[in-house]
Image 1 (cartoon, rainbow, N blue to C red):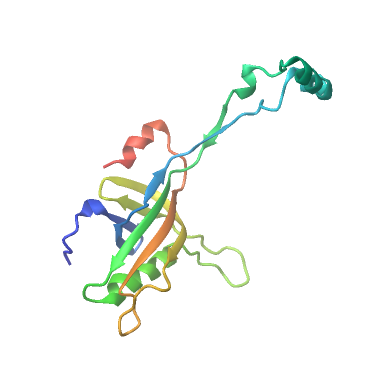
Image 2 (cartoon, rainbow, N blue to C red):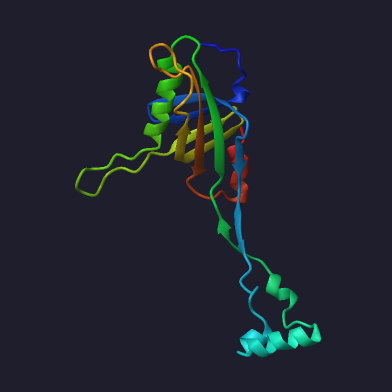
Length: 185
């Protein structure tokens, strides 16, 4: 049913037989983070020679240091998959069960495994497709957390009249430089 809101202001989360569509709210963000470390920051000529106490004492007296610019050199250790913090709003216009409660339940299902009671071999949560505003699409993502308001206003039947759901979603793998344009539609 048309709601008059631009598809560019919605997020579409799809998994197998389910699709949840929510209005993108304030505070939603995307992060692409590289892992850089400074492996030499605590090394110096004095510490490598095993005389760090003497090197520290010399620095205190002379005002010079046994550190060099190389001590601040960063080394790339990898990249995390893209991460998304989404604040999605759901609002009941006609049927609160279908428009608010069911999307919350389906998002929780998408984030959940299907484990066996006593034996290993259950299924981990299935990847989802995350479509943000019909302009950015992550084909293999996982929902890391689903948070929603327990004290949101309710209808006379006890269903949520509206609710805000906060999601942490991450891609399954890091993206290569050549793959970044593939995320954009």
